[in-house]
Length: 215
Image 1 (tube, helix red, strand yellow):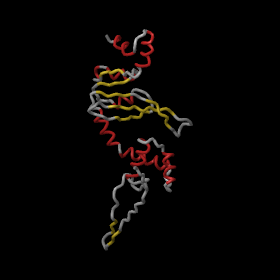
Image 2 (cartoon, rainbow, N blue to C red):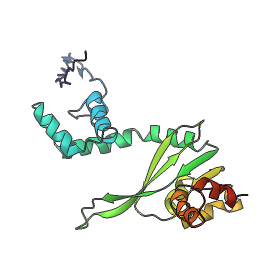
Image 3 (cartoon, rainbow, N blue to C red):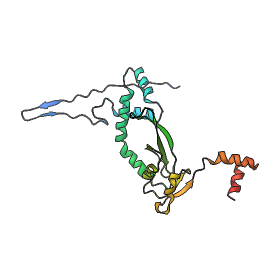
């Protein structure tokens, strides 16, 4: 049988001893922490990150969970932790991006995301672009841009020479010019719906209709 042991929080108190002599005063140093002068240790930061981005628990829900543990950790505090951790993890992100750009084939798309902006009375729309590597570079790296313009993917894919699989969005067209060194690979995600309809008009199964198109 399985039994569950709930997670727990513990408080670590660090005591820094101070020594003095006739010539100087020295204080023992503390172990380095991901965020200096923060109440969150590395394991707690990792838990908040995984809970939000892997387990899809928004910060307001995590706030309630901590309350059940008898601890007050506000969503604002956790939001600050996430921002600091994002900066700390940037070298890892850049390393993943460099490895991904070594792929022979990269797949990409974009989707909208609502962005809260204190300067506006309403949420504006940003874009998230996932980039998927090939079998030898099995990575998925995400990039955020405030708009859906060409500048975002152009900057991310700068220097890449290989196959780019994307939809027919016009911003990609400039990437497939000979000088850029990228080769267009069409996206088939929109094929089934439209061609099942077409195949019905011709009284052919979708697979047979596809074979006839390329025969």
